[in-house]
Image (cartoon, rainbow, N blue to C red):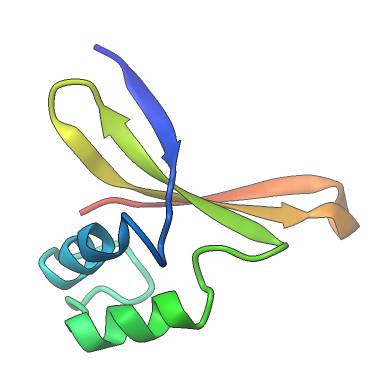
Length: 89
């Protein structure tokens, strides 16, 4: 079994997959546990919540099961550390 990270293209090839992932899954342990609407997901994508100079997002992929969720890595250089947030359905 192999799990890899694959960089997201939120404004291109991965946009519809992101909308599907967030709008069709529950996130009970997330700060926002209710399913998001497709319009809400698009708004978050458009406001650069997945990619900026300070953070980037990746699919968490399993070789047989496909995309399992999303990982966003934050650059906290002021504190000399890296924070990771995983979003899985």
